[in-house]
Length: 301
Image 1 (spheres, rainbow, N blue to C red):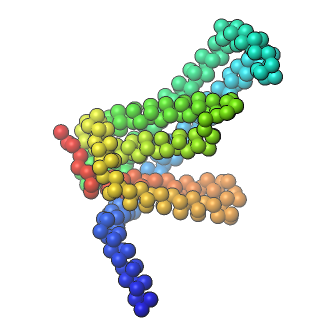
Image 2: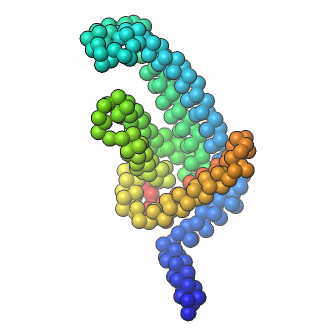
Image 3: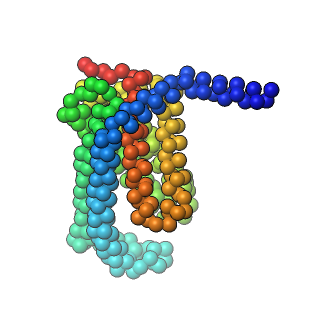
């Protein structure tokens, strides 16, 4: 009897899965994925170049910014008499900061920091729209029989990326400012872990809608951005199974890469991680396109 109940329960579980349409979505996505293996290699190559380009840009600018920050810290210490005076000789500290803020050398270092940060933000965005635009178009090309022209897709990808990218930059600067406030405050209103959690939630919500927007391929970007919020809210119960599948997929990859024999050698970890993760990323994009195609129709007008 127990065996019969287990079989019945298992059967009802798979029946519920079929009712959600998730099984057919996965089957359709996998078929589009594995039958177009040259496109998988192209997508993986594009994503790999993107990671290398962004890592190089951030690393180089990071070193330059740190040099200017070190100079600023040195100037601040010289003007205020050191950190020990922050609480003991507030008048001296105030005068030192006041004279420092009008110093040409201080302004030069501060201006350089903001300039380099601006260059980094712009350079990363350019890499994003070039390489990620290509990678998303490859997935779009693999997931549909009649894709729109590349130039229309690329134009919409660029325009749709601007608001979500700018929002992300705003969240980063706000979180850094709040983090500094938390670290310097004697009685902070929130803990650092809570701030990190809030930042992660806000960024995930932002790119939940941003990612959905990339899968909407109407002719006009502003309509696609508007539709992604309606689609993301109204169809969330339909999208949720896809999100859970994606989460499980990346958790499995992460667990596999944590195997000791793989983690012991950083080069082996990098190679295996690249071989597994980048094709999986391509499959995820296809699955997202297939999910949108099933539950949301593009506005072609």
